[in-house]
Length: 144
Image (cartoon, rainbow, N blue to C red; front, side):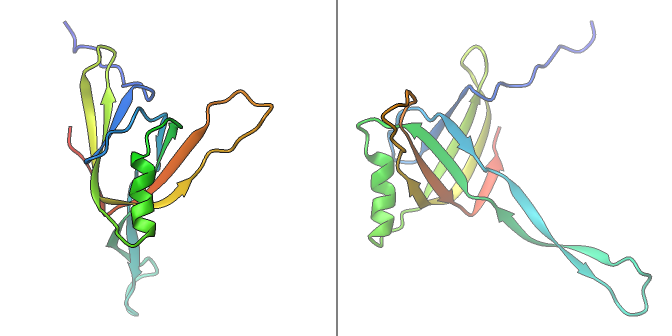
């Protein structure tokens, strides 16, 4: 029998674990990516195409979004940072398959809150009120 079919995981089945914080489910996680700067270098006697050397690795800020509840854990994290106590944490983003098993995991290290956004309110709307927290960090690894 040919190889077993492997369908990709769905992007709506996930959970986020923030070290030391008990927070309800998140509705969206965006911005976790990595890139390496490209440094171009050319000596005067070389051909017209420069050499390309690897530079610094950079990571975009990650944005977590969740529906407003009575939980203050995420807000307290940025509130402490605003008051001068920046607490760095490990954040784990876990993809879940159709059976509810953890199947892919990304770990974000030395994360700390850089921006908080309170929900917008509209008397004629019917949407859920959403809070968001942007996290700066120093590295991301796919661990499974």
